[in-house]
Length: 285
Image (tube, rainbow, N blue to C red; front, side, top):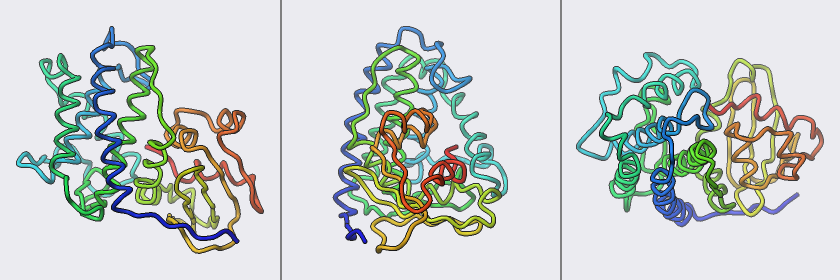
């Protein structure tokens, strides 16, 4: 059996905050250099400007619980607690229209302002501080560490979407991707489980991120748990992945077959053919 590793949640949270802060000027520069905000982006039906507007909405939403400008979610968040994908899709559809024409004209400034606001209002708070996230479910909260990881993932992945539309480079560093995976996915993967598809399914995945976190992902008859640095146990399938490859596969920006062909993902263990089931059972909205 492999030895159990450990991590410092406070130090990793601070590294994630620093990575998020560092990506904000990159986003601002990208948005300043985009020749056509109406160009198609890497997100179907969204323009480059739409993606930028969505980003500002995400930053504002996660900071809202700590500011004097709380959101009135009643007209935005779907009623009830339906599937996560449906809730996220409904909120995303509205998010691109929350900025007026003047704010759209200075999108690079708004992205910076709202991203820096999130960092400012959460500065000094413990990683396990609850953050209201009603778009994930009524009365739902997630740890600040996960929210910060999500801010970094939104920035990296949607930065790539805008860069693809603008035909600009957008490198993602392995350390950045590893922080997203370690900070946000233990919280978000169980929420994103397709409970219908997972009914009657029992699979244990050992997810090993090269140079990054190691996650035990266990699907058990319609539920899922994700544990960092879990004690050694027998798994059905081990997935060894480069952090950037796994991030882009998880967010449907790279097909899994292409990541495998390039050596970014490798399956092993007793039942390696189950590797593709992970993306089928846990869908990224």
